[in-house]
Image (tube, rainbow, N blue to C red):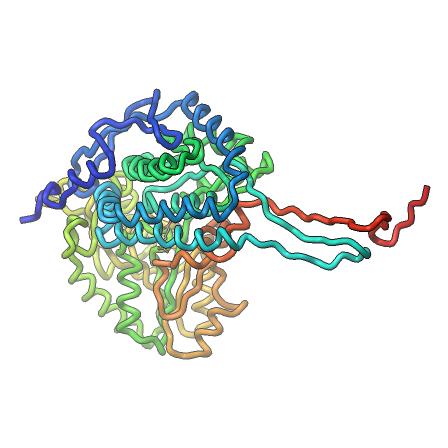
Amino acid sequence: MSKKNNDFGIEKSLKNLGISKENKGVSSGGKYFAHGETIESYSPTDGQLIAKVKTGDAKDYQKIMDAAKEAFKEFRMIPSPKRGELVRQFGNKLREKKDDLGKLVSYEMGKSLQEGLGEVQEMIDICDFAVGLSRQLHGYTMHSERPGHRMYEQYHPLGVVGIISAFNFPVAVWAWNTALSWICGNVTVWKPSEKTPLCAIACQNIIAEVLKENKMPEGISGMIVGDHKIGDLLVNDKDTALISFTGSTRVGRIVGTNVAQRFGKSILELGGNNAIIITENADLDMSIIGAVFGAVGTAGQRCTSTRRLIIQESVYDEVKNRLAKAYGQLKIGNPLDEKNHVGPLIDQDAVKMYLDSIEKCKAEGGTFVVEGGVLEGKNYESGCYVKPCIAEVENHFEIVQHETFAPILYLMKYQNLEDAIAMQNDVPQGLSSAIMTQNLREAELFLSQAGSDCGIANVNIGTSGAEIGGAFGGEKETGGGRESGSDVWKYYMRRQTNTINYTASLPLAQGIKFDL
Ligand code: UN1
């Protein structure tokens, strides 16, 4: 018998996170208000209504945007290490709330508890990263061609950063953007996914405490639950200096175009179609674990999920059989129960897309090694639990070229590594990629300029689970944006080149003479 969710302590966690049965979904950092429609958040784990949220309307949006602009005037004047101190306190609050927030992520989104906790850990990690960075926002100094001149560059904050995040990482992606925005001196306005509004309210409550304890203006961290009309307002608002958008390629194309029209900046983190190449020199034990976790983790709903396995023909059958065996051992069920490996999809729409993709794959000639299907009956009442499945396909199938946010894994065969790399690159998306090999030549070819064309390329690691310290994002239809680590902070600032003349004369550059 499966436990009821109450047994997993959900009610207590909701209380600890300040979530009621009825919530208002707009806040400038502390107080809540909302004048739009009411939406309901159901858990995909058990189909239960968790709570209701009143969404924001256009006036509510303007209110938090005005508050953000006002707060920015003050926030930009605070030294970066002092803003880093706010981020440090935010990270500490997240440590205190890790169990509750991880559980809510798992319950509202449906990923396993381990992955929910892992997501909160990513938030804590980005805070630590940003605190250190707050003392390192450095620019270059250059030698001027003119005597008695000094030339250097510095970075200034941009203003309001709009964050539009997706349901699959309902808290971490916002935290990546917020931690960096804050140390850079920006304020944020967040539109979370309507599918996970309670996670957003929980985060907003945590951050409100930090703002209050430090007597900061509320507008530094605005949040508005709303539909695509609110997203449109944020995207088309000339006061949003940077839009950080995570979502589908289809919507990202519109967001990117609209922001570019008004010469705004954008960071786009769109679809992936990630492959692992398994060569004849791979450690197959590792390859199987990497592939299975990559494909079924978060029920295949990560941007970085493994969707394709490109396998050398001499090990193809062995990999296929071992995968089928591993899939046979997967436990599908309530993600709050640690014995389960795979939780539900986010909602019925996602289930429909999963089923449609299976049909399309079959129609194009795909053969299923492990069949899919929707699980029914006791413990699966939400109707969102599906079987992870595996199909043998050709890379050029239309469905294989497309990202389906579900646990469907495609297998294909190759003879030589150059062909495998060409197949890996021959999709519209370019987020994450991996090679499993113990052969140095193979690994280096994969990482070379003739290798993977993705933003992330790993050796002997799967495609998902990137660390926050590296720049995260991808090429082609993935959108070209980068988030979280490395020098990504530069996206959140404007660069200014300064030249100072400390002489009593005015020599012009390029040797130009202009005597009066
Ligand atoms: C996403 O799916 O949008 O690399 C983000 C990973 C996570 C982040 C995924 N660290 O799988």
